[in-house]
Length: 75
Image 1 (cartoon, rainbow, N blue to C red):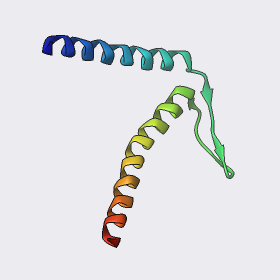
Image 2 (tube, helix red, strand yellow; image 1 turned 135 degrees about the vertical axis):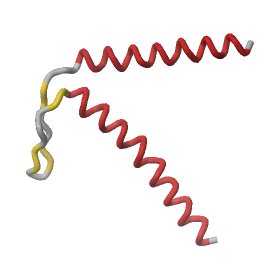
Image 3 (cartoon, helix red, strand yellow; image 1 turned 45 degrees about the horizontal axis):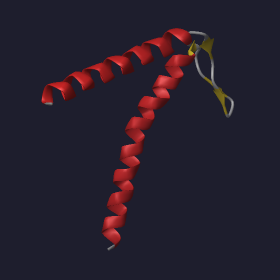
Image 4 (cartoon, rainbow, N blue to C red; image 1 turned 180 degrees about the vertical axis):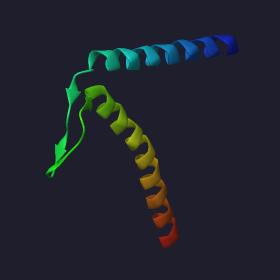
């Protein structure tokens, strides 16, 4: 059973990597983002999406940790 879980995890990770590669190859069109008058350099659309995902993976837990500390201090 332990070997099956390890193989299933490996297959899942390989599938996830394949999906990221396919997404990146399908979205190579250059784009520039504009926000409040600020403009970014042109990069592939996939780069912006993956960058937003990575920033969210860092910022989300940090905000949860900070809010958790604040809530714990009040009690």
